[in-house]
Length: 234
Image 1 (cartoon, rainbow, N blue to C red):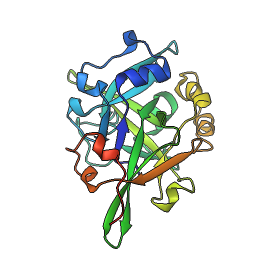
Image 2: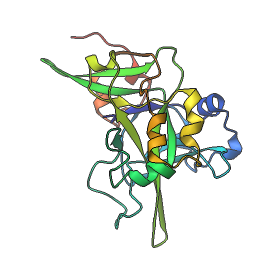
Image 3: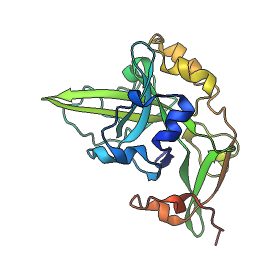
Image 4: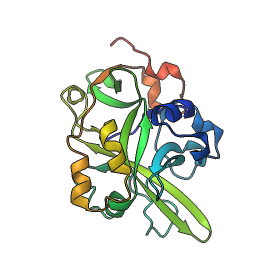
């Protein structure tokens, strides 16, 4: 799974994906800054994460969404089950994800993510990032929920099998899309589930590096550059 990650700031997202400021849709200045310890959450707009999607003409736009997908058919604005990750093995058929998988795909920009390894001394967090430090594009899905005048847009991160390096620490990792497949992933013209599945393979196109970080990252209230600093194993 992916339960914590680091989001780039607005300027880095705009520069890396060539998205103009006129295509930014977020009303919250907080979301525009680098955040070092993002956790999934329902109901708090200031905890939303940046998301890249394409409009009907294929133009990229940068918006922010709740990181906990709320199915369009949900009767209430909150769900009791976990939808912040979607497993690659079942994403095309699961009730919460099958329609977004065909029609509402997105990129979730990240500088890296955290996983916890179980050791005799307790759980040790690790930070994973691209080898060259550039932003990563997690394969994501988004959804639009609306009822009685309330509108919630939300997203999920697709997770799959880890590469050999990540497998040393954890048995899952976010599906990362290389630059050459991102346009196809976002294209509204691709709606066949089997064609969409092909875009996700192979699931790990980037060289990933990782290092130990402090256990303070376990508290989502801690959000500063110290979260990604290397620490020695006690």
